[in-house]
Image (cartoon, rainbow, N blue to C red; front, side, top):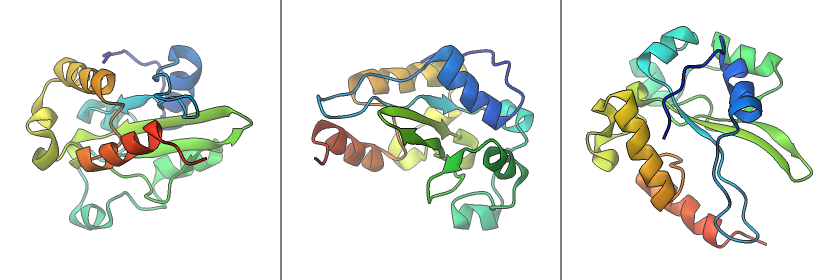
Length: 165
């Protein structure tokens, strides 16, 4: 887990920077699998910087994401990035369709949106950024890059170890 100063001024620029400049991620777990996508944890300050709400409204919490018309989603669309069907929620996955074997995907974790639910992650959401990066980095090195709750990550782990062929 790293804590980095980021030059990007928008979420699309952040995704591009992550994939082209920093090249974060992890190697695949098994032969036919795929490498782990980079995971970026957005602090409250980062949310403010990139035009995201620091916390979700009750309506957004119920929906599990920010509305489709949010300016950040419009920025992503203009930059030709896509979101999974879950939309832009606490564990957003931003991607471009694969070209051959070339994948472009970044996973975002937003603790202030309850991404690190205390039922699964204990007090991880209250950790300062450097300690949280360390905890998630250790988790990623011992298990895999987190993808959501520990249950979701467990399912992803099983798929990574035995991918469909």
